[in-house]
Image 1 (cartoon, one colour):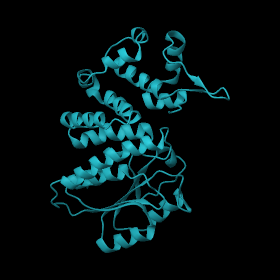
Image 2 (cartoon, helix red, strand yellow):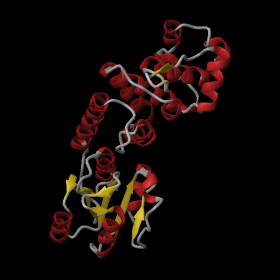
Image 3 (tube, helix red, strand yellow):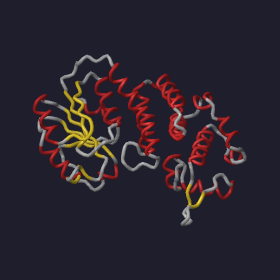
Image 4 (cartoon, helix red, strand yellow):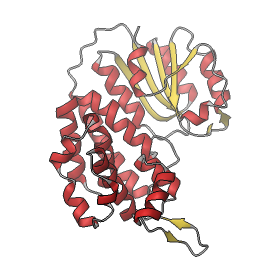
Length: 294
């Protein structure tokens, strides 16, 4: 069972903590539990209820009426037709339903949501506008997870499988001169965004040398010297790179690979305290991968 603070409910549902508190007081919508030390928390069922209510609110339902429904009645309103006709192209609804699929270990629901999104948006737009925001919201991209490790592994492996299959089935024919090296620095293990970048670059007929996770810096240098890469991309998600600070890593990254364009991305908060080298460009998200191609 998950234990969520009200701040974590806000992060996962997109509903402000202040609003959640008002709904508790006015409508008795959620009833937090308390630990032995009297700290308030919410469980998986209450999170799912809040996520479903968020979907229904986007459909025009009123919180005053939804608050009077039991969980079974709320679930009945969450149908495929409802999700597919929700405003804003259904993205918020799909993200909420993906979170519920994760909490319930529901592979069938995940497959349905993923397939429906691909039919509506295409594979790349699904990755950029649905899956990436979903992973960012639940913290899978970076090591600050609020869900249990088993839930993370369950959903991460489903998405990873979809990405690898899509990468392997691309009709690739190298038409660009660029060669890209993709890697995670030593100690970095969260490779989902790196796989997304692999798919996007390969779909643009860019040759990709995918080194994957936990790559020692000297191996990146060796690969670069061998293949004369023109693009390097890595992601920083941890507070340090092995024994080095993120700043030290970026300084090394800046001083090598001088004939290539160097890019980095990762958890936003980590870059607030970093002085970015002039010759390393930070990508704000996976959608910026296309801007790497000149």
